[in-house]
Length: 319
Image (tube, rainbow, N blue to C red; front, side):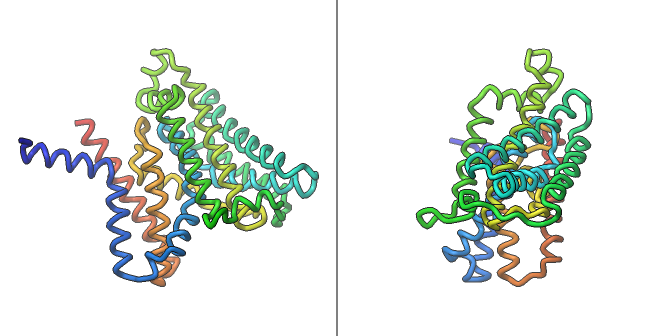
């Protein structure tokens, strides 16, 4: 028979690994009692649509954080990638399918440049991606001359419905599955965990640390480009200021989902729950008519709590 202390340890371990999921369930129950509008089908779909863009960005961000980096440029890369898609279609006359490929490749290039700066120029990822955030946002404004550019029908598909299901939600699920496969079932994913856990030990064991560092930023850029397509599809246009501030929500989703900012720990499923949790908080506060100013305060407190929890968890692991 299992001892009470052993059972308690298992409960504590489950709570530590799934704190975001427990918080999400509790929050949903509270909102369901607080307002009947929360658990309606339309509102649940709205939560999914609101979470989709941040979740896709956060999936890419998970690779970087697992490898002990951080990517502050994902919002700007999403914006410039979508702007390149719109510009190559509207001004250069490329077929819509080709503009999408060009946009995704652009995201990979922007991510790769951040990775190169981090790996070979030895710039901290914070600085490398902070610079890229400014470069990408500036290029978005240069390409568009500060004005929105209308997107084509194929791009607009990413913001539409298919068989009654919003395409943004479908894209979130598809990109989440792809990210989970990469992180959990490939040698590249194992390298990310190894590099994030101990970079020097990874180097000595034969893992190409530089290659891994570049790869995680390339993947982050690709996921950001896909998120940019979803944003443009929903708006039917590429906006110069699209995804401004989304990098903070992406990072918060990853940390709330249980990843460690020191690297070596993180799950795509946790990131997904973190993104949904943020969307539910915003949605619930909107339904309850809470001021958008107070919403920022609440989100900031949630992020601070998540980072503090991560710090305490690492201190316990060290002991």
